[in-house]
Length: 83
Image 1 (tube, rainbow, N blue to C red):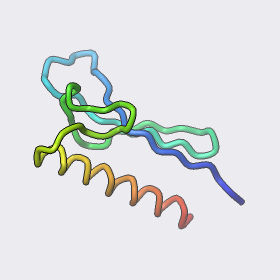
Image 2 (cartoon, rainbow, N blue to C red; image 1 turned 180 degrees about the vertical axis):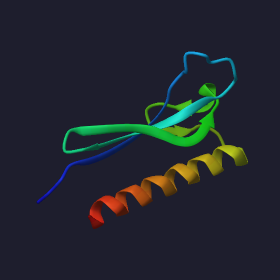
Image 3 (tube, rainbow, N blue to C red; image 1 turned 90 degrees about the vertical axis):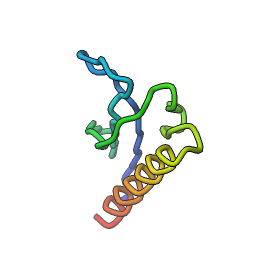
Image 4 (cartoon, one colour; image 1 turned 135 degrees about the vertical axis):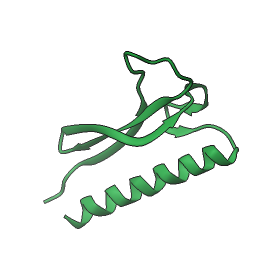
């Protein structure tokens, strides 16, 4: 049986937001059912591309963030397709 899988990374402002960074969340959708959870990292909103769901820039911290998100995406896709 084929299932529909989609993963989206986004930042969300918290109600008590005071800092310069916002937490990154991921939305996993499988067959129309979705679940939102924290990706465990933060990002400055001025350095976030909401269309691609990745950080913008060439600094080492942005590269590390994007590598982390790519790794997380790969792990989730592998877990989904193995199941």
